[in-house]
Length: 84
Image (spheres, rainbow, N blue to C red):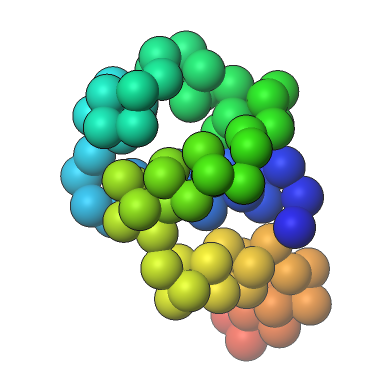
């Protein structure tokens, strides 16, 4: 999984659960600025920190699948063709 995918998944999970970066960062003991950097692909969290961030943000496999589907250019092309 790429850093950007990790960030998009965390950001999506936070949004679905109505959590701010400040909320999630406080739960895992990091700064909101660091979480912002993780979400934007600037920083790569350790495996333990990533697990804690996922739990705090309410990440699920379903959210990961939604993000992957949204990132898939084939899916977007099929949606565009369906609209036309």
